[in-house]
Amino acid sequence: MSTYHELRGLKVKYLAADPDPGTAGDVWYNTNTYQLKGFVGRAAWSSGGNMILARYGGGSMGSQTACLYAGGYATTDQAPAAAVNVQEYNGTGWGNSPNLNVKRSNAIGLGTSTAGLYAGGSDAGPPAGLTTTSEEYDGSSWTEGSDINSGRSEFGYCFGTQTAGLGAGGYTPGTYIALCEEYNGTSWAEVTNIPAGTASGGGVGTQTAGLGFGGSEAPAHVATSFSYDGTNWTAAPDMNIIRRNILSNFGTSTAAHTFGGITPAGLRVTNGSDYDGSSWAASPASLGTGRFTQGDPGDNGSSTTQGWAAGGNAPPDAGSVHMEEYNNTFEVVTQGAWANGGTMPAGKHEFGSAGTQTATAVFGGITPPSPAPGNRSLKTYEYNGSAWSEGGDLPAAGYQNVGFGTQTAAVNAMANEAGSNNSEAYHYDGSSWTAGGNVNTYRATAGAAGIQTAGLIFGGYVPPARKTETEEYDGTSWTESGDLNTASRELYGSGTQTAALAFVQDYAPGASAVTEEYNGSAWTAGGSMNTARKAGVGGGTQTATIAAGGNPALTNSETYDGSSWVTAPNLATGKSYAGGAGTTTAGIAMGGNPGLTATEEFTGETSAETASTIDFD
Image (cartoon, rainbow, N blue to C red; front, top):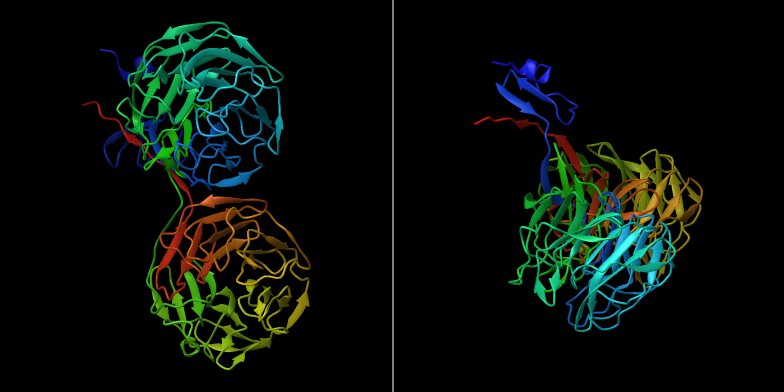
């Protein structure tokens, strides 16, 4: 009888622990668990960052870590207005990208996030308003290209790239068409028709090696598949499940994956189908949420191990913000999320805060019922990462104060106290408060950043005016520095005295999406937030900040990388006039209007190598 070594030419390693890091295909025997194990792929969907705007019927292009969603609908498909908005995903969250020149939906979406193509479609509710317009994206702007020859929506199949794309089939009023066109980066040309008029199918591959499948044929749902070699269409094996309006397609013509869609019975499905070049089979992975999209969603990447699905039509016939990522890997990816932390001893809002997720101090503020002046607080609460306890009291009760520094070296400044506005700053050493230097100009609801010996405050409010003043603190005295570009209040800050960020600002007449960056002497414009907000919370550095909540009780959050903001997971409960601290991977938000006691902790996305047990039974 042959041995494993004779058959394979190698031996299985005996290891006391699973290897770290691992390599796909590794096989070993774990001598502690007495198991034969290996790093093998697992196909699974997991949640990604939510889109900024709910959409379905848009065009998608790019890979799981760099993709675009263009146009589409926000509401029902009875008589919606097509969108001009474009959203971009970086593998973690969504940000706003330059708008299309022509609003539409149900169009061809092909290519990458820096070389995309969006062609045809409908600029009003289907089937009216068909357009022949084509637009190309270069990573920074959309430019109109040559028109497609035949205006239509809900294309049957589309695949390829910006310079070698294909759009086949589609729908015009009352007709399912078979017309096929190719694009060479300059012009569209009619080529061999698909075998039958088809709309709302799926497609993957290239212009010379493509695969189209599913959809509708006048008007029945079909399971048919066809391969394309650059010249001719050839019948391929039927799909194992009949579906149309498929949500996500990715892979190649010989290793294709498709998920979601709608069945002949009108059911939104979560299941998927995999194609290996010879037959279709049920995928071991399923979407978390059943959705479909009107028209072809485009080719969501050529990878066979990574894919994505965004938006889609979800109950009750409306666009979704939900994003999911597909991975076939031995690494288990866990999306970042907010989770409940310890409960504060008493609820309050409009207070100062300082520290990190596991060592936080909050002080001052207003306690319920608010905003009665008699409910100003002098209490300090400390958080250790799991529970809150009471610390040393402030010298006087006040609210609308700012805080910065650490739990054991914090600064509290500019409290609105009973009968006066106090310009004094106080220092906290982890147990008691002592007097520091007076701020030059008092103002309420300012922003702050830095540490006790190198701090910064900016903006604020002295009725009836919002303020632009910035002051730097050296631990003893305050010095005026460069003003904010626009007077603002109810803002938040992150970073250091020489590299700070001002965000969630209230500009007249209300919430703003503007961000400003400070270099130690002057403020300049940063990237705009995706959501205009004021009185929110945040933490981090100038190039890695998280912002969450805002008035009125927003739940959404987003992160900043030094140039642009992208969406992040939502808070469980909306917060405004709350406290925040920490980083983009370990943040904290606590309290808030009207006297909330809840704490939420943010943990960034993680991945872990997970070995599989090989069982021969």
